[in-house]
Image 1 (tube, rainbow, N blue to C red):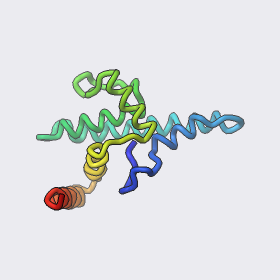
Image 2: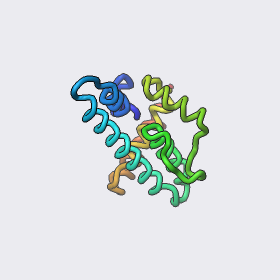
Image 3: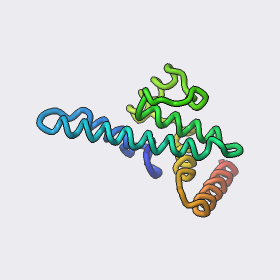
Image 4: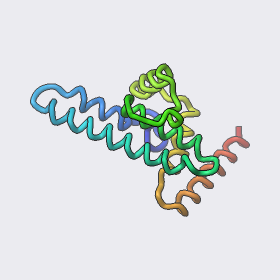
Length: 143
């Protein structure tokens, strides 16, 4: 949902899914089918990440972020109410901003941490999150 890397103008997965969904003509049906598959695949991955962090000590806030991101891809996703962090109005706002690529600096910073936390390699994930925290601490001292 968020731009990968450091370029906030980079097109997102949600953008490219929208491109597939807006396809007209002879390729419309396969493009829309592929868009639906991508939405389901991305939402499923995000739910699995949420499920990974849900039972962890101090992990629920991260889990709720992943569940919220999953809902952007599949708004009618069936989640346990306890794991659904957004009201319908909040979800609609998040989807609109995501479709328009309007992310706050805080959201982009959080997205970097969420991307690191998605890494399956525990040791690499630990090193990367420590490095990110050190960069943020250093950046805070410089401003």
